[in-house]
Length: 242
Length: 260
Image (cartoon, rainbow over all chains, first blue to last red; front, top):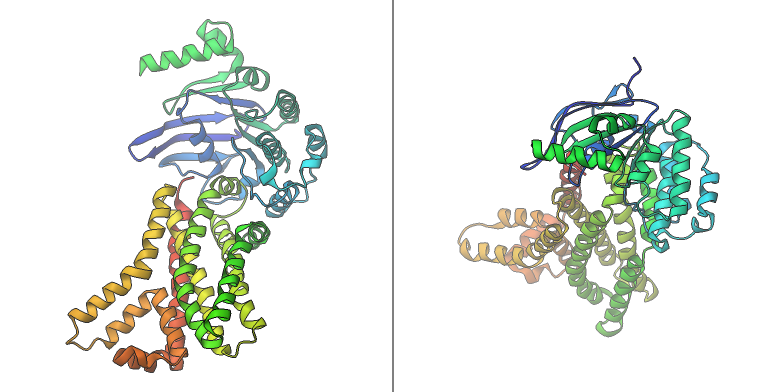
């Protein structure tokens, strides 16, 4: 059996009285694209943050490509992360932000000039981040996530804030990486994105895994055509069962 | 700690380019210059400036420090997702704000003394060292607050409260102690109380250097004996450095384990 890209076992996270993740067991298959979906406050972001080490679980174990997370940060070398909202030091230029992250990673990976060019970002990279529009920052965010040839790509709402053209370019890029063997984990509320990008789907409901499996099996399971209806029915079923 | 150096390098170029740093330097420069022109030169200007430094520098450092760390939250999250330790991020950001603020202070206050050719070199040096150490200390306190308190309104409120305590309430409390326990020998407790407040520490150092310790009466004589000697100077600077190190260590401890 191949080692899962990300494995969670019994992961629980509480914020005060609120339990956000309830003993989550989850294996994210390497080399596939897995979408994590669920209603707001289902625990999607907390799950991603726990994998990145931003949040520490109260119980349970997480491993990334077979390496257990034990407070060390070296495993993040293999992860490219695109947060939902990008925020960079506002007086630096895009190029300087890229240079800083490259310095920190200590790798001479070349910048994806092709992606920069297709985003039309080249002329924007010399301007201060403060002056860039939200969409342009999001493009920069994407370029940074893809910069270091990661073996795992974690994308939190990757197309939010991007215009349709940029969104299409990014999706095409993600698919190409996925075909090249990169494990992709993404969250999105846009159903068409999920249909285009994801092989597997994980439905989180109130901090529990309600469904995990291939996206193609979901319709069969729920007996409903269309991803949106199938997911919605799972969410409703989980809510009425709770 | 190589990563901390890298973060520091980029943060320095970020913060030095912000509009606030030159504005802060310019404000201090105009103020110092005005005190020179209208208040007489040399030690008198130093004395007038002292009060500004003791009140203004801690306030600016606390407010800049807390807001800086709160505003950098998303950026910190991006850094945390990189193969970098948390201590490197915390210290890199701390240096990235403290050095520009301290430089703005040193230039703003120091430049007029240079171009007015002031004679009070030792007093100016002590003023500059005190201001730089106060900047480092209060930015550290601000970082400690922002690491512990997640809510930015509460954090900023706490920072301002601490500033009020240090500048206004503390002196009142010390006076109260002196009044109530006036019949007892208070020299040693007073020395300790002074060491516990970085703002008071700066004031005492400066007043002693200006040879007006006699104005402070009996306690002044005790202070002069203690702070005037080499041991006292070392103790004062060590206490000020302690005010940099302690909040930094406490803040870092929290920063290492907290959730983002």
